[in-house]
Length: 260
Length: 169
Image (cartoon, rainbow over all chains, first blue to last red; front, side):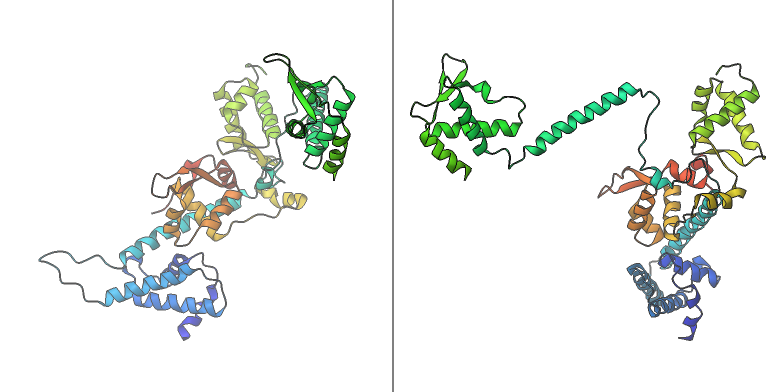
């Protein structure tokens, strides 16, 4: 189609189907409110074919618009439906398209004015303007006005303290806090304390929640194996844990088993 | 600083403040800092903005006052700081214009005007700080509303939205 060749110059610069349509309308000085729809549709389709031929990426919206144009064109070809006495003609099938084009044109022109405004202002720099706005937003704000050396040292100590706590947690992860290890430790303590230890003694700080749980499970395990006894002298009194009278040899054996 | 600061002193003080701020400062904050009455501060700022000499200018931007360079030295500044002017795509600009004039506005409403999907473009504009979310439209699907930011005003070098060029019919 020879007509298509004339359009290939502007290929690829359209931000959407309305942009392309508006370009065609303005280029051919078409009145938006009296669009020669058949001619415009042909030119639009010629443009799409040229864009396809040049492998220009084209959103599905361009195809949808082509369908819309052809629909309007076919509706115009139909004879107007006969209407009742004296009523006005039905709405022009082109009206909606005209309205869309007009509204789009207003914002396209507004966008151009914003662009020239922004371009003029892009030649003006503020202090520190070397950081692009999107990067500058990532720089944390630091307030140094009221900072004393003491405050800094305090802050450092706080951080070190927290790091230590953090470290404590990391070193007592799964492989370190095992019921097996706690059981062995508990047994050793019971061996060293013939009179037994109090329940509270089981949990000597520093301990973590995992330590408490593992130690408690170790105690339950020793109870299950009949290796320890837990006594309470009086109601709500301190719990005392001591070796069961049966001796320790068997437990040594089971300790080895636990370590396995 | 005291109330009885002379005109020249007030101007010099304002210049200091705008220099250290490096971004738009509302006149009220400048009045607080100098201790001068707000109307005297505004008057002094307007006089400073009207000056033509020097490499720096005082401009009213994003509801504040800012000390910035004169455009005619832009190429020197760009060479010194290796600045590549950033440009928005046509699609981004059209979307930004619709948001600027119709705010707050939803993506479907923008798409109705532009005739194309705007999701990617909105992400770009949001990432550049030119627009932000402004709640949701009380409509089916509760779509997100968008509005422009102060960064948008700074991008254009305008005081507020009222200074936007008129949307022509």
